[in-house]
Length: 579
Image 1 (tube, rainbow, N blue to C red):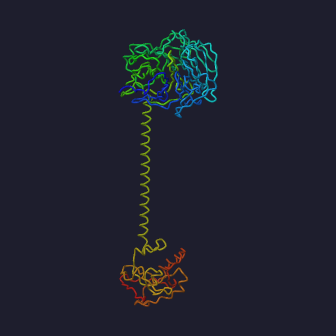
Image 2 (image 1 turned 90 degrees about the vertical axis):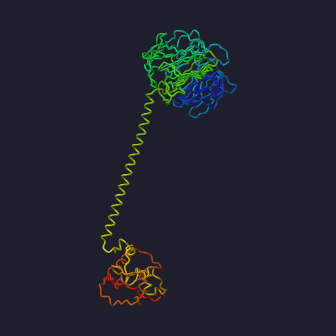
């Protein structure tokens, strides 16, 4: 599998890195390429097509976390285009900006960079008419409305296609731009241009195959990297600009010179290394590209990953690892099973110096020069290991939490089951020790349906059953009782009550003493009589205030009600009654 091939030719383009993705602007297309394995180029919505522009990454509203892709200058066919547009990574759309002046309209051969402290764009040199004359024009454009433009006078040598590189949170430096210039000049909104005291041993060549990048040491040092892509294999030379602590370095102090022993040492893959001037590793050209390039674009991220795109028909891009001072095997990086630089991290905004919000700009001697910016890309095993441990910890925590919830649920279910069982056993014990199951106030009429007893005077005393016995209720013809007497058989136990009390006083006057037509003789009853039994039930039932209906029970007074407790062996025949 070959390297990802862009859908259009990468020429006259510029690029930046944001969120592990390389963004490339060409006059024909706006492209993106995720910096990870098995990725491919993707076309994005296109803004205003221009030629000879520079690319800058910076905030769209002054917030360092809300970044955008700026296209500064460039020739356009539209007379209304004032030379400034941006693509918002959050909104994923283009916006045309109208500065208060036309200083960047149709400007080419210039350099531009974003200044964090002032939330503005610095534009230096260039021409609006297309000539090759050096220029000292300096403009600062605010990225927030009304997009004011401020001009600065400069004693800096005139420059043609200079390079602007980040220097601090509020400063940028200019190098090159002239065959005689070896000094490094810094610019800030408050101070303007001034000499840093740093210098190059030799002027940079006016060659479109040479561009530069800046390395920030944790000890306060600055290291300038010069990429010469016009020779084979490609060469990277490094010079100290600032010593630890920020003092200017002596001109020509080279850092990380080529060391033949460096290639014999195994590389520590995916491990981030803090760069210092004293511990900077020697240059390793094991995977140095042999393809020469001209008119390429250089994009740099905050953790030291440099992506060089275009400038060659053979390979679309190459990668250099600044922290290890070596070239990356792009075949393994994009399509291999292992990579020497991991590219799966997220950007980390910073309130101090952060290359993720600085744009590293370089220029070549060709109209197709491009600018570079920085982004944050984690390329070390330490961070990857942390992420792996975090994922494992989160997974184990979730599993343990789920197990704890299941255990608690099982305990609750067991407790509820035991409670229900104890409650059931208690009810059963209460029923078994309740004598004859005639606790009417607690159990109601349910025991009567479970324990059918021979009825001496009739079934359950309701209006219907009493009508069956007496043969008449309120002048109506008695109907068949719900419990037919011919279904009753002799059972052991008590006989039901003889007479019960009604809960309807109206029925007492309407119903006379029943005249039995059967052979049963009440005068022959010699066993125990009692006023207790069903009468208590119906007396208690009077307090329930049940409504009267067609089935209201009609009984005689409780003073005349009697309980008949006959011998359990006595067979009782239902009385014959007249319908």
